[in-house]
Image 1 (spheres, helix red, strand yellow):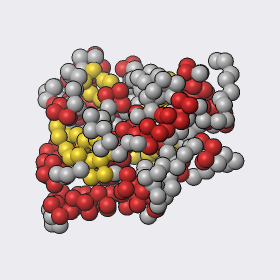
Image 2: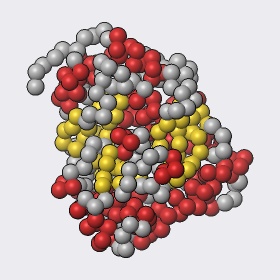
Image 3: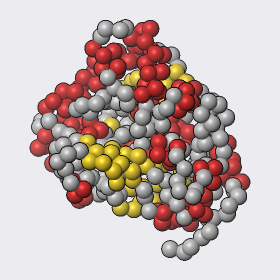
Image 4: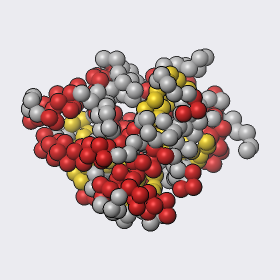
Length: 383
């Protein structure tokens, strides 16, 4: 790979791309079936990160895909579902390539409920995300079994039906994110304040003593999926010629990938190393799955682990401009790969750590740092 030294000053293309990103006004516009909210490819399941190689598919993603196949009634049982996936009879595709964001090992299929996040500045633009599955039995954990399927059906049935009624007006997400940051959230690993503010917005129509309300009160990560969709909506506005802004980022447990604004739809990939962090008692580092999830884009946008400065590298050097809508937190949003290459750096991503065998779910939490060469390769492609 040829070495290219990125300019220290913001390029014209990156300056324009940042302005476009900062003009986006994401808002939650209710819930609908995925197949009604988007042009869903036939017999397809969407997953996190870059394309999956079926010969190397991570077990947690395969588990979640099997549960989705059963939800869709495309197979009679888990054995048939897995065989259909591995044979290619049911296609797997990157969610971000279809305007969808999924956390960790979660997947998205046509009859799942879609949370719709639109750009109030340009309502033709939208990104979808599944409903957060709560703290236990959530599909993002990459588990399989009758109880997981039952919970998946409840999330996409009873809860989705309730949310489709109570989320009956646009809820702007930038003010919520700004207030949440000011209250101590990072909009990725910690979304307690953001979730509380969203629930307050729908509370008058939600009721105080329903199963759905009790579930949401016990799901501090509910805001995350909405914010992931908002992050993608913001980032994708930077898809213009010459832009080095990161517009897609994620991992599938085997490969990590990134896209830049100047090359929309083109994944640059590297092996997805497991996050480094704290594990629950009884597991070993060898039990860790490689980095996984589309939430990496949240950090690459400037949140999560990237809210703190890296040693000797001021945030202003990586994130050139404060976002005007974040008056309370003064958040800096938008990461040019040019800045990473100039600094020889890579964004740090805060992630849950999943069991690679697919039967223990979340086994810890930590930080994943992709190789700087990944961003150099992507930048060289547009330089």
